[in-house]
Amino acid sequence: MTDLQSKYNLKSPGVKRLMREALELAEPTEEYHACPLEDNLFEWHFTVRGPQGTEFDGGLYHGRILLPTQYPMQPPNIILLTPNGRFEVNKKICLSISGYHPESWQPSWSIRTALLALIAFMPTPAAGTVGSLDYTPEERKVLARRSRNFECNSCGPVANKLAEDKGNRLGGDILTAEESSLLKQISLKGEEETNRLQDKGENVVTASVRPVECKDSGEAAETEIRQRLVPTETVEEEPVCVERQDSILRTSIQRSNR
Amino acid sequence: MSEKFELSGEQTHQEGQINQDELILQQQRQIQQEISESTPLVGELESISSLNAEYSSDEVYLQKIKDLASKYKFVRRTRPDGNCFFRGFSYGYIEKLLSNKDEFKTFYTLAENSKSSLVELGFPQFTVEDFYDTFMEVLKRISDMPTLEESKRELHQLFNEQGYSDYMVVYLRLLTSGQLQREKDFYSCFIEGDRTVIDFCHQEVEPMYKESDHIHIMAACSAMNTGVRVVYMDRGNNKQVTEHDLPEGSTPYVHLLYRPGHYDILYPN
Image 1 (tube, rainbow over the protein chains, first blue to last red):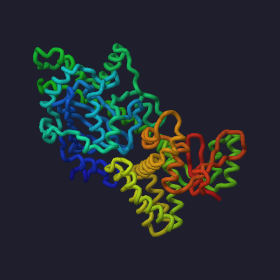
Image 2: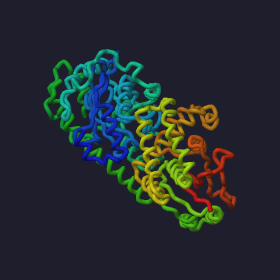
Image 3: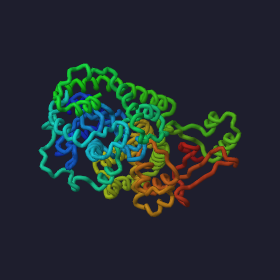
C-alpha cells in the first residue's frame, strides 16, 4: 500500500476510491478476499468461497479483477483463473443488470458488490451466455475439491486466503437490503468483444443480451473467442498430468483452460 | 490435478489476455480521446451567434438562433457524453449560487444533509460516502476562494477534471434517484412500460452516460430545491424557440439549451 500511495495521484477521486476499497477489503472474510497487486492498483486478485449447499461448496476460486482507468465510472472486469465449470477461465466477465445491457454498471457498486454477485451467480444456469459453462454437478464438485490446491503465480496457494469457514456465511445480516435486492438483479456474462469495442466511446448501446443459441453454433462461436483470447495455445503440447480415471474431467478442464 | 497443468494454463492465458486487454484499452482510449479533444467537459462562454456555425445553411435553425439571441447573451457548451444534463445543470446551478452567499449557504446545508437520506433509502453507505465526500470537497474548495472570480475559475477547473467532474455527476444522479424513489407514486405516472420507479432508477438514472429526460430534470430540480428553464431548439416549424419551466410553475434559476439529445448552459440577457 505504501508503494502504491507514492505511485498514484492521491488527489484523483478514482485512485482515492480504490485505496478506500483496498482498506475496506483488507481483512479476509469467510467468503471473499481481494487486494491490489503490489505494483498495480488497477489489477486486483481475489479468492471467493463456493456458495454453501451447491456443487461449488468447498471450492476456493481465484481470479483477477481488471479495473479500467475510469473506475468507478466504468465496470471492473472479472477473470477467473481457477477451473470451476461455471465460468470459462481466463475470460473477462462483467456485471450488468439481468436482461439488460452491460453498460448498466452503477458507480455506487464496488469490488465487494462484484465479488458478492460472482458468488451469488455461480449456481445459476449457464443458459448459453458468453463465458458460461454448463458442466455437470459431478464435474463441478471434482473441480471444487481440486480448486483448494490452486496456486496463483502472483499470490501463491489459495488454500489459506480466506478467513476460517465457520459455516455462518452470507447471513442476511451482513448484506444490506439494497445489496440483497441488487444481487437478485445482477448478472455476469462474458464480454462480447465486438459489441464492446463499438460501444465504448458512444453511449448508444446495442442490446447485447445474447440469445440462447443452438448448441453447435454457440460452441463454435465460443471456440473462436477463446482462440482470439489465447493466440499462443500451448496447453495441448504440454504433458498433462491428470489421472487416468478422470478423462471426462480432463477434457472439460482443457476446454475451460483454453 | 497437477500444478504444472494449472500453471501452464495460466501463463498461456496471461500472454493472450494482455494482448487482448491492450487492444481493447487502445481502442477505448482512442475513441475517448476523439470526443475529449473536440469538446471540453464544460466549455468557455461563447456568444449565441457562435451557434450559427453549426447550421450554416439551415434557415429554420438560423431563425431560431436569432430568437434565442434576443433572450440570451451566452451559451456554454458541455461535452455530449450522455451526462450533459447533470454536468451542465450542476455547473450552472453552482455558478449562479456563487453570486449570492446566503443561497449558497442554504444549498451547502442541503447538500450536507443529503447523504444520510440516501443511506436511509438503502443506497450502499460505503460508496455513497465516497461520492458525497468529493461533492462536498468541491463545494468547499469553490466557496473557500477569496473572490467571486477565483471561485468561478476553481469551479471551471474542477468541472474540467474528469475525476472530480464525473464524481459531481454521479452524486447528482444519486440525489435524483433518491428523489424519484421518495416520491415514487408521483413519478411512476411518467414512466412508460411496466418498469417500476426503482427499476427505472437502476437502469436510466444511476448508470453514467445515460441521457436525461423531463423526469430526470424534474427530480433533479426537486432534489436541489430549484427550477430549470429548458429552451427547446429543433427543426420544428415555429419560428421561435420553445420554453419549458421544470418543475412546472417554478421560477427558473438555471437556463439550459436543449437540442435533440443534448443540453448546453444558457445565460440570460
